[in-house]
Image 1 (cartoon, rainbow, N blue to C red):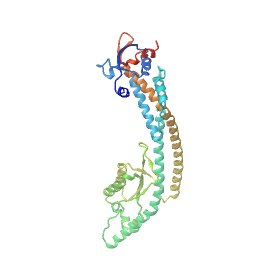
Image 2: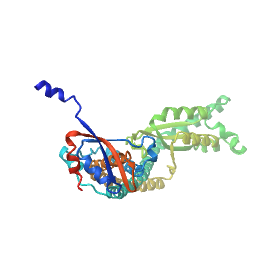
Image 3: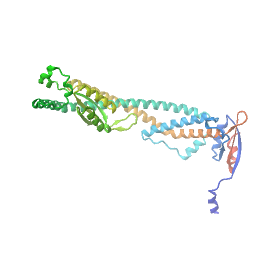
Image 4: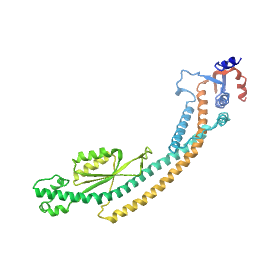
Length: 375
């Protein structure tokens, strides 16, 4: 006997083929009630029609759009590592067997549209605020590192260039240096006067920030393009920079490039643009008051940008927390509506205002099907 009972688990239940004639207006609510039985499967009476030619394709598309919005909400919750609340089995059964609501799609569309527009607006503000904050952080690092570069490297370059030119004059030869490109443009009086030339030993510079992953290629391209007639220094930024597009943290380096030619300056700027390096203009260290004033002003703006960015992230986090608690419920409502209209697409139009459907039902549930649908 036990073997017979166990083997019955692998046998199909006796089925009965039935036909239904439903009023088109009452069809969604009727199928919702029949679906709660979980014992009927409809056959497609429109095999020749494409999905886009069926009667209720508009409702199915509306459900697809709601599912897209729910996936968008889920992705935003994942950015904050928020887990979507899962409903219990009893809650899911009560949700599936809940009375049919005729305007459930209209209500969900209005509600989810409002949340989506708010969240997208917050994301847009977050992207702009992150970009502004990153620029302030980079400028602050450029100011701090640039001052160190100027104080340490600029005097050494001046001394090195002067010594090189004195050695060249003493030997009667010609030494290649960073100043050779500008020598042809100097007035004859300055070329005759070595002291005036040595006093004009000021270097131009370009400062900015480049991705650490591009540092080696960037330096190699500068060396090849300028034929070694520039001096480059790098310093890493300890704070990670958040990419506003991918929300990933990236490492960056501050750079300063010393050179003595307008043609080299043009090449350097083009290379910076090619490597998506951000260039920043900083005041000369010869004017410490302007330098310190810019440093203080940027520090204050950096603090303000951080405060606004944190408030924006907190608002997004609280909104995603609320959405994480509702996504499961909304998903089951949309799935139920989509299943109803997908089944109605299998029905065939009969007389005016009526739909005819056919399908298989478990024979033991045949008597309960009419009772599930109120007359």
